[in-house]
Image (cartoon, rainbow, N blue to C red; front, side, top):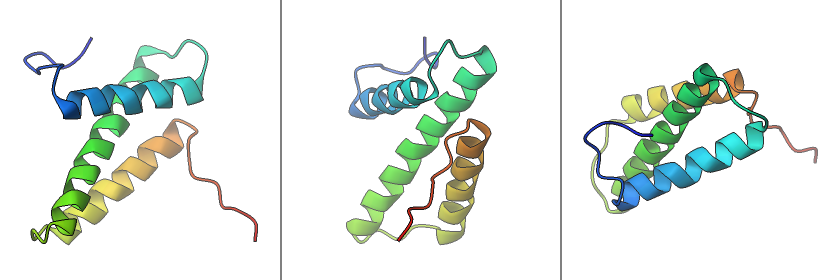
Length: 90
């Protein structure tokens, strides 16, 4: 199942599926609809952030405020899913 009207054969759609599958595998078990929706949003935000980072590397100007807001939203959703990044001990 995916977004209506989105071609599932595109590279970004394949990447979205790859990220989503990884998130769901990490979460484990049988996710609720709410958890799956949040994981889909996180995957979509990952794609968006990857695209903006690629733009930056190509020298294309991006809105840094938007980048920070989306990064923060992604981190918040990941925390909600119990997937927050853990700090490594030095």
